[in-house]
Image 1 (spheres, protein in one colour):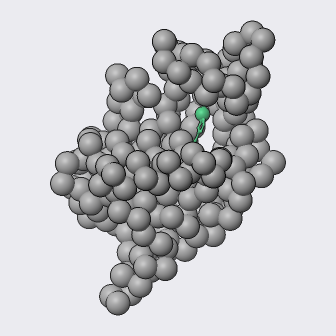
Image 2 (image 1 turned 135 degrees about the vertical axis):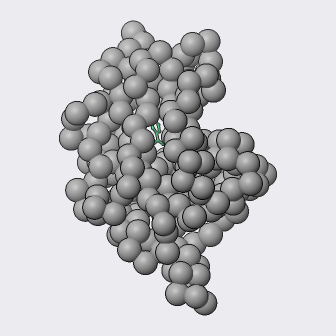
Image 3 (image 1 turned 90 degrees about the horizontal axis):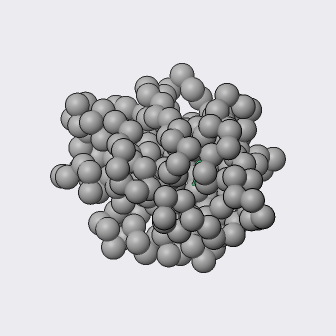
Amino acid sequence: MKCLLLIDLQNGFCPGGNLAVPGGDEVIPIANRLMEEGGYDLVVASQDWHPAGHGSFASSHPGRQPFEMGELKGQPQVLWPDHCVEHTDDAALHPKLDLKKIDYIQKKGMDRLVDSYSAFRDNDRSAHTGLADYLKERDVTELDIGGLATDYCVQASAIDAVEMLPGVRVRFVEDLSRGIDPATIAVAERAMAEAGVATVRASQILAEARGA
Ligand code: VGL
Ligand code: ZN
């Protein structure tokens, strides 16, 4: 069972969004092409879905500015601009994303007191979203992951997938992903490789699906 996991392909992370990732919208056609012709049995999308006043927002920390380092639950936390507030247009999946091809949407980041970069569990590793069980129940053996942002939610999801889904081949789809900052993107790519995540490009996946 081959699964494609699309991370946070939301307006908020695309140009014009509240936490825009450079070139974020460029991955939407790649996601659509992979859903159509990538040979997947299952497609899952994650959706960052914060209550207003979430603890990861700089606006929840008096006197602090977006992108400063702060603290949440005693852990270092990047303080973000308000983004992906539940039920707002910023939190909606990108309008050009082909929603009909998505089997399941995993919302995350709903607990005001902790952030959740990973689609699998909160940053403090306590609460699980249920996605790992969902994929296990469906006997997923191969999981390709890409989306926004490489240096935060993609990295965290890929590394958690290796740990929480033993025996599953996990790959990072490089050109299906964009990151916030070149320095942290480079660190994220190294961390994923060290955790046992392979790197693949969409063209290779399409060639595999054609039986090449
Ligand atoms: C993300 C920062 C805050 C992401 C989500 O999707 O990578 N980054 N919330
Ligand atoms: Zn967020």
